[in-house]
Image 1 (cartoon, rainbow, N blue to C red):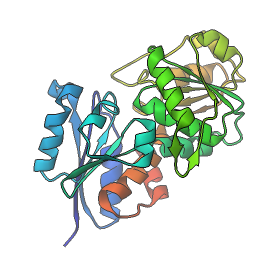
Image 2: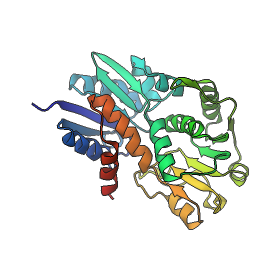
Image 3: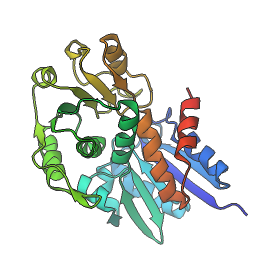
Image 4: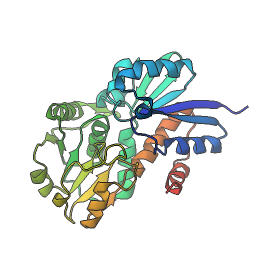
Length: 287
């Protein structure tokens, strides 16, 4: 009898997500009966305040876990029983395992971004990087940027207090057995000045998603010497990436982060080691 795995994704505007197909195809290849459901807050007319009800419903229905995306990665923290070291240090959760009556939060986003960046922009200059967005994804991406070797990361967010909190948390946090930060993150409020001196820019905001069109900064600030990394992957071709390519920038889309965060989430949900390359090929086959 095939082992059954039931999981879902909670977030807003997620109808274009490739996670269900990616997880279920890998589950089938592993001999699992694997079902992945979308729990789209936009479709349901709900918001982050409804997370307690959704978590209880998932437990009662026998879910093995949930992926969490915008705008719930930080809001979900207060409703969990335990956090992995990474999730605790980053203050954001994108994967919740429901097992033995407990809700355990994990963060696989930072690994996903780091692995996607290594593959998509090998050898990129990392002296000065600007990151837009300090929310749930932004916290994980900031950590990933430091692990990749960024010497100075300027963090820009519409909420400067939130950006300052991420800078303080990542600068003094202990993740994966080692200390990171060391004053390498600064909070900025002048995109033009920061980008003029930068080697690259990361969009860690939801801007560019189908449900949140637009860009975090004016396209006129792009220049050929600037590399551009995106975390949004639905759509895979965002307004930022189109503008960056038109400006002659080297770019990496959000697909790598989507794949490699899913690889680790699959393992956490099922207890079965996935085939990362097979999951990546399936993701790319979806166009």
